[in-house]
Image (cartoon, rainbow, N blue to C red; front, side, top):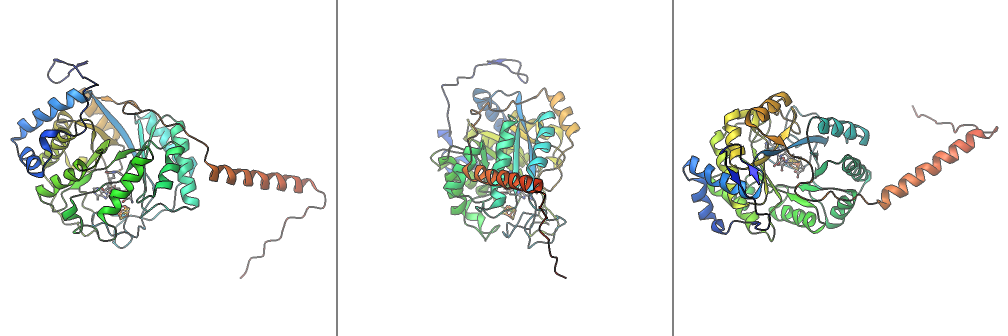
Length: 382
Ligand code: SAM
Ligand code: DTB
Ligand code: SF4
């Protein structure tokens, strides 16, 4: 039961009456008609649904952390991290586990209950870097934060390994409709993305998948994206809605910014179509007013990215968001309200490596005690 801050009336949330997809909007035509409804009617319908399935005062603060930046071999037309485009993004190798722990701890102290770690990879590879990411997931799960990762394509075994490390969510966006997709990306197929989402789902990881508006697509494409989720056996637990951040040097650099009304419509339509999912108001907030964002929360947005940087592009300042929460009466959402905290299990690959390192360290310490010990000479070639 919630004391609704907006209408001032009491709403009962029937947790037994969950509805993953709204049967009234199972076709693209129905979704397009919904999206085009008079704005305030659309927002009212969305707000009504939102209150039946979620606490309207709670908005999750999530922090994004780019753990491996730039130099990506893919050609996603929106992305400043693709190596082939000349943008200001400086490529950076994988962060250390210690640095991730430090940044996660700060994010938690500032009210974030989820950390989303992003890597500019085409796909996950079974190498030392992936072992390090597994350690990062273990460490952040130990901080009692929801751990989300977005690492590109991943196979079923890799998904299980991440789940065992304590991964709560995997973010892998379809980005747009099947029809418009080829206008934006050519180096990986829509089907590849669906497979990765399926691998996360099968491993028991919650799915976070959404898209970008403002790339030159039609309203039918925005609704086509939602139709792709309608057609899944289970729709995503979270649906991030991003407005394109047009970055100089990318093929989409000259795209005209969308009106914030379009963001509100997209959030509201997604909310109505998928009543249980968390709709995440994601990239593009720097171009929105507080009033525009308020309408998104009214229409069912249940999360924002907090902190002055997304992965590589700017986001509103932390203090601005703090003030917005105070003015609108929003409360940062606690971790694990949408699912249980995963249990971190031992990882055989990491444990074997650590055992080997410990053995080497012990051997070295013993050798140093030997009076005849002389360190091996390292020959540096000119
Ligand atoms: N490399 C991984 C992948 O593509 O799956 C993970 C990181 S990627 C940056 C995550 C998502 O960020 C993309 O799928 C896209 O939806 C979003 N994104 C990237 N650049 C963006 C931009 N300029 N504006 C809005 N969203 C963007
Ligand atoms: C998502 O849908 N949006 C976030 C998160 N998932 C990983 C990423 C937005 C990135 C915006 C461009 C950048 O900062 O590089
Ligand atoms: Fe690479 Fe991901 Fe950017 Fe595409 S969106 S270029 S896969 S980092």
